[in-house]
Image 1: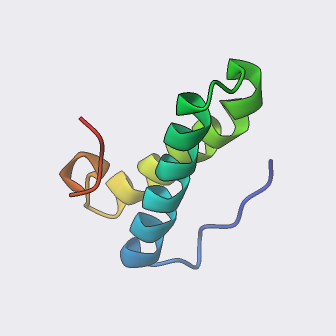
Image 2: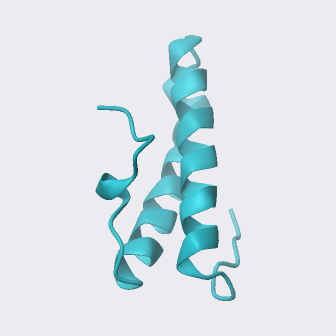
Length: 66
């Protein structure tokens, strides 16, 4: 998986994180195999790292499931 997040600001990273988090949640709720959602999980981890480096925390997002 190759991604290019260097040119995105923290707002764009946050929007991407929320979108992919929802997609992962939906896939898991529909019973997707874990191996089928691993790439999405890795992408979320990368986005989370970049957001954290920019001074924001994904845990502060209002739409994050508890």
